[in-house]
Length: 280
Image 1 (spheres, rainbow, N blue to C red):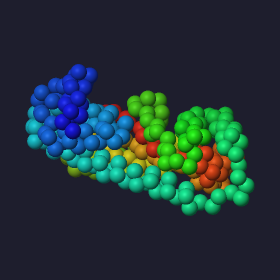
Image 2 (image 1 turned 180 degrees about the vertical axis):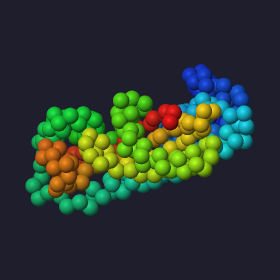
Image 3 (image 1 turned 135 degrees about the horizontal axis):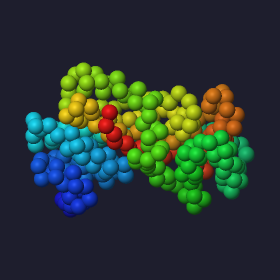
């Protein structure tokens, strides 16, 4: 554990100047270092989320900041993240376990045929412009030699890129902005963190993600605005749609074939994570 903490500290000092300065000013206490080591080892997105949360604190300095305040804020954000991740892990485990209880098709479809048809579904989704949905569908494919095993596709992760900006846009912002205003703007809190859920109303975000969970950490700037770091999580799986996707037959057909492929074990649920930091 000590080696992991040391490596993390060295990495921050070498690669993130603002964090290096932060650690010279306010040392991260042992409890928080232990939490950081555990959380960064468990999820690929957590390192960026934690780094951004620490950096955000120093992008918005206050003359009243202290080591105690910093570590209190960081502990709150880390515990929120730990509880959040635990909930997401339980969701993924539940989705994977539920596949074992689904009725299997009476006709056993060979893996190559199932995947070939699944890729046709991907092409249909891609053609209607839902490129990230298609990317997520590709990630879900289970290799032939992993069929029947406990294999789970790796987490699909985006940070501060085009897709992250699309996800953390008006619809999602509206979902958590009310609480941010209540706690931060009206409540006067200088920093904090909270979690919630959101369902996208339509379009590409609906087909790719639909219902997501999120956790937010924030820090007040000198000008009264707030820096926020948001982590969004979804469990990528498929459920049968009768009239979903705005009655888009092509996308709905692709989705419903995926339900079939999922029952065969040719594709499996996995975790999606997106991180974005910005000033609001």
